[in-house]
Image (cartoon, rainbow over all chains, first blue to last red; front, top):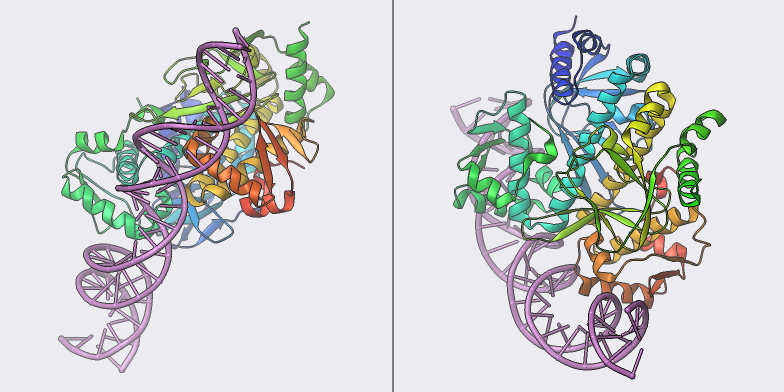
Length: 242
Length: 242
DNA sequence: CGAATTCTTGAGCGCCCTCAAACCATGTGG
DNA sequence: CCACATGGTTTGAGGGCGCTCAAGAATTCG
């Protein structure tokens, strides 16, 4: 019994059942998923575009990012994955990746074989649908990010990101209303926001000056939640939390 | 036997089986899906954000767009749906919409009840997985669009869009290598690309001057495919066509 | 043929980028 | 404990891409 795997699976089940009604037996089945535990360092790529994978990643502790790159080499991070997230659950139905998965901080990862997921999903359609639903939530966040990057300016989109991450960390007990750790450099944050590191720096300063939030040493201090959500035009419905 | 419904379902099944191996019986089951046929006019919204739906839309003839809006009212179209597409198949597992669905041209739509989808998906896990896979492809396109809007300039992203739509129309026999109909105004195209209508106009002119493609009266003329894909940095792997 | 859209073009501006350099943390080895 | 290397942050100067506002031309449709 690996404690890292157990903790990660517990968080995973927590999120699944918050959106899908599952019985005690069904939860237990998911908690019993097998997987190899490993640690990756910032900059390590767990999955590369074009690769065919036969197992999914479950985030234990740390932060992963899904990314794509243009020919010229500029990088867009299209999703962030925190503990309990399964960034490529969809690879079970689509094993050939069209994007990459990279570690943004030192991260513990549980690798769960597709075969084990298949056993649960095929034997019990409700579990299959719960997994499908989880993938759908991920897609909903991507759509919101597209709006964020396509139509909001730097300050709004940065505020929006800080709001989303706050609520997601709150769900797993890592945000208490005032501060949370977001282990991203400003350069990585720029890759998330479709900006440059220089402009992220200036935008964060502006948010600090306005008294909304304050980033220091990978920690986000939320000084005025209402102001932050207002600047970011943040409406959490797309996250489908209760 | 409604011919519109039949044609739309035939296209739908074509796409599904191009990515999921299904038996003759399974195809037949999908072709038998029930649904009400209707016509919507440009500007009509089929689904609004926040709404709970109990049926999905299948595009017959025309063009639908998935969109979100900011507080200030600027609109981002995050997906285009052509004949045979089911824009909100995912609503079967997530009935509360977090985005809208709008008609971009006069469009015939088949409304398929979730209940009918449930019968297929629950009785036959392979069909359920095929549907899940289709949703995953949709998500893959959204991720590519995020890269497109986050990291490519106006000319590249416009070219990229024209390439993607060309291949998707080719799949359904509506692009022969030289031209296809794309029933979008430049204003709607701007909502897709995260630009303004004015700049879309200038960008299209630039693509025409360079001899890559030429848009006239809702028709796209591809004059140099290699050049167009090169400008757009287009690599169709994310579409998962053979 | 007339009315409503859509397309096209111009002028000016601002957000964000590029390039560059300094400043600051952290960690390592002598 | 300091010297040094490394990576991240901060700041400045200048420029360009795409936006805003506005008006006229072309096209579609009733």
